[in-house]
Image (cartoon, rainbow over all chains, first blue to last red; front, side):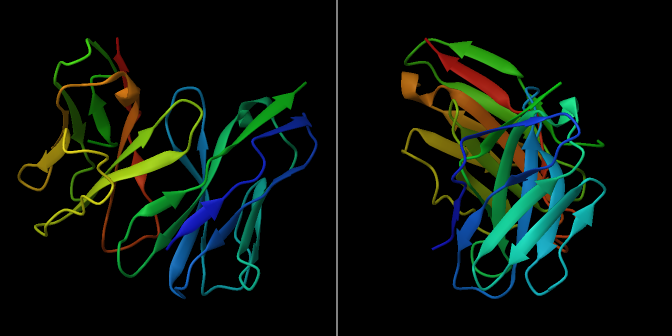
Length: 115
Length: 115
């Protein structure tokens, strides 16, 4: 079975600081993708960053980067130089490329960036 | 269209009534998903359509829930005899099944309130 766990219900960070959101997952597959999505109050799910499991290099997108530890099944998101607009719910999700190809989500982390 | 469109944006209905929620995916996306997000929760998978294949209905919570996808494009999620526990945001997503590179594109959801 495919499961994703986010153990931090809420996190706070001050503007310009760095914050790391944790995510662990469980799968017996080797061919999969991992994602972080951001959901602001508008409800729109916005793709922040993705990681292919077969790539060892950690993905980066501007201020967002991941620490992908495949053996430990860990996929944390680091947000550098936090901005007020980063305030949102963040969801970690996994997608298997075989079998039931759907996104499985964690329960989310609410991030508050304060001035 | 440029994105995934869902309608209505908000729906208030009386307990026991039937409701229909609509999703218009990105043109050419063969995979379409419905998710449910209850207050403060993660996203719960409901149903998955892939081209002309039989849909994966494994996430539907009861036989009051059904969905169809006509012509491989627009999808309708129907909830019969609504109950208060059906109150949630219903999100639709689509993706190009030929590649996962761009992830899933989500609509802004329909907030359903059963009173």
